Image 1: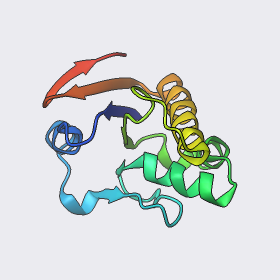
Image 2 (image 1 turned 135 degrees about the horizontal axis):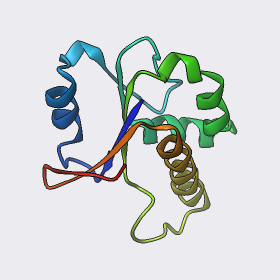
Image 3 (image 1 turned 90 degrees about the vertical axis):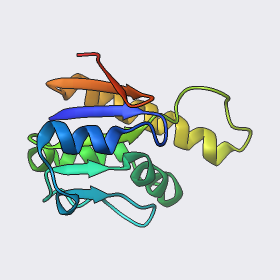
Image 4 (image 1 turned 30 degrees about the vertical axis):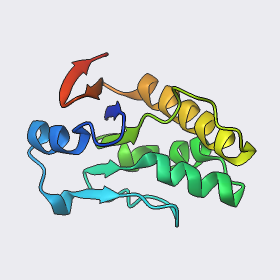
Length: 125
């Protein structure tokens, strides 16, 4: 698995499509409505999945760990919401913290980790 992180609209999806030769149909975009579709080669918007988990009282890291075999050869993309100003609302703080925990776990499992900033990729691992 490879992990791509970075701020919103920094070029993460375009980088993934270019680097891994993916089509739009091969990229699943998470929503705050449920779990990701692990059958596609690329899952984007993991922070939205984490928001769903926070709202539902579920453990995002535990769900991801339970599906390890399904995503171990995938490209995972997550917006970096765990840096910057700490939100005042408890739910948003929990969302930020859980997203950070998930990305820390995924970075440890990843073969490669990239951070995108202004469309420029930086290989972290």
